[in-house]
Amino acid sequence: MTLASQKCYTDSTSQSSSLQNFPLFLLGDAKDTLKTLQPLSIDFVLTSPPYDDLRDYEGFSFDFEAIASELFRVLKNGGVMVWIVGDSVVNGSESLSSFRQALHFKDIGFRIHDTMIYQKNNFSNPSKTRYHQVFEYMFVLSKGTPKTFNPLMDRKNVYAGHTTFGENTTRKKDGNFTKQKKRVISEFGMRYNIWKGNTSGQENMCKSIKHPATFPLWLARDHLHSWSNQNDIVLDPFCGSGTTGVACKELGRNFIGCEIESSYLDFAKERIKNTRVENGLF
Image 1 (cartoon, rainbow, N blue to C red):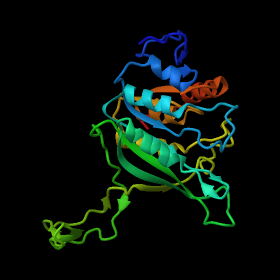
Image 2: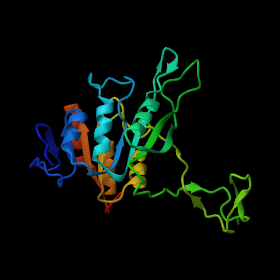
Image 3: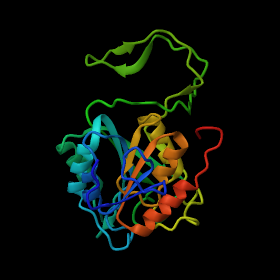
Image 4: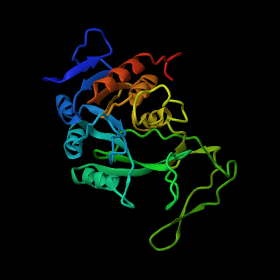
């Protein structure tokens, strides 16, 4: 890997540019720093990009289409990217930037593997003309068929212990129901694609993290568990406060973070460095 003129910081004092040294931090515009990575080198991408000027990121903006192309290039075949994003309301209308981005990803070769919802336990901006907005989209994009899926089996089944009766409510094209073997319903089933949980503020991250927009650590952990395996290489092209990197350290993934603002990157580096993982993995 050639890092060209971009600044590279690793968690070692040598500041080596070798991809073997993780975590790896790349300072600069993601459309440029991503060019320094090898094609087909990333197993999983997890990020929440800045969107619709809802926050002031030290005056920086980003070239979405250029970065999207680079993300497709560096992602391995079968790799997955989770793109967490929302929309602003401008002149009484939602921007739909999220939809435009999802369609562009599909145009350049990504599959829209799933459209998930992150439902927040609270809301920050009450509205008087529409229902309170409490969610963001989580577009699960894949480069071909996903090579990894480790489903979270923590949804309590209402009918746990009951026996199914040989058919379910899934209809075939002819209108008849599909048939299944009789089975006893287990206590827990696979989670749905709407994930409800605390915001980073409710995790008390906002008080200690100097960054205008953070996403919760539980969300990063759950996606890392779902779409990657131990020792996989995980990329966050908008590293921010380093939440993806913290989750990678806890779960035994190798982390690469890109960030254009040096103060954010310095904070992320220290935050990840100071994360303690006891008794093996989190």
